[in-house]
Length: 132
Image 1: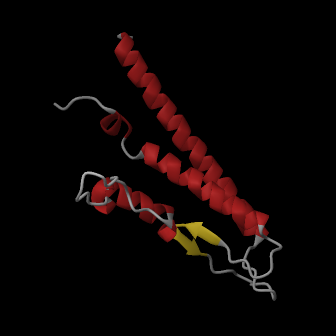
Image 2 (image 1 turned 90 degrees about the vertical axis):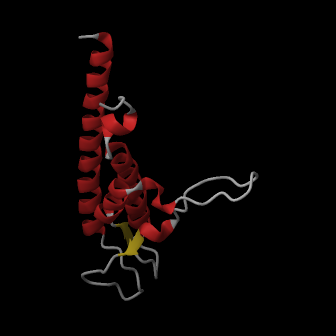
């Protein structure tokens, strides 16, 4: 039996919450640029990122070869994808406000569900520590 820690207790849900927050930023940026000529709508492939996180977090870690190097993860904007519009605008903008709002609302609901799940996990851990 292993020791109880956050990785065992929370699983991938804390990472899911971070990805959903990042996705909310990307979708809000899309909606903010709905009238910007030539702006291309972008999105995050949540399932692919979550699958990669669940497999191994350290697969993208940088190798430290000297004492002065800082260890870190190489995570850029590789996860951002361009969205294919149903009806692109003449000015090249691919933001469809209705689609962005619907995806944003779905992402917000999923974010809240993940948050509530984590909240219940923390309550369970707190009750276990108190012996309740």
